[in-house]
Amino acid sequence: MNRADATLRRLGEAQELGLEAGVRSDDHAALKLWLRLLACTAQLEAEIRRRLRERFGVSLARFDYLAQLHRHPEGLKMRELSQHLMVTGGNVTGLTDELERDGLVTREASPGDRRAWIVRLTPEGRRGFEAMAREHEAWVVELFAGLDERTMRQLYAHLGTLRLQHLETAR
Image 1 (tube, one colour):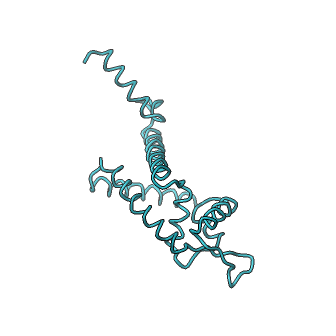
Image 2 (tube, helix red, strand yellow):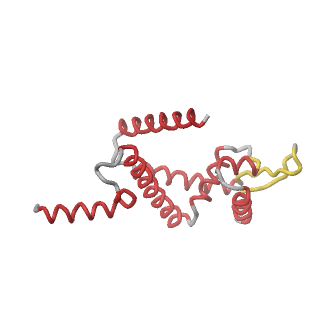
Image 3 (cartoon, rainbow, N blue to C red):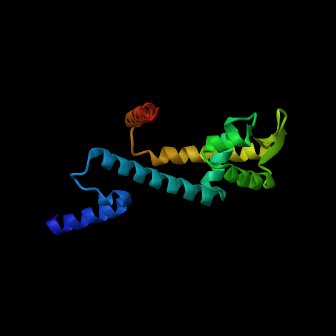
């Protein structure tokens, strides 16, 4: 391959990398890693969003909402649900209204707090989410198929260390 062809190939690869295209060889390793993590996250999330929309006609936000309720069969107060999803109460209220209309969740007054509502999956909501979750897991496994088990365990551990370090510095 001549030099011009190699340069064109590298330019094409850089365009495919999106956020990483602006990285220079002399940039700090932490900056390169940051941009690669962002690019990977965006790429993987976009693919999961696309598949959820095409296969089930649901948004990632709706899927995440149902996942939280699936993890808490006893139900969650709307405030707790908002905290778990890391979104505003208004977002949770809007999703709850939609999902209640679709028969996937129920909302009832909290016995201990008349101002609070507890949201639970309906049996139909539970069955529907479990079908989505099975496919979602298979998609994630497929999307990470390029990494062997050992590499995935190491990445998981290293990113956990990074999170702990951040928590300690934030205190």
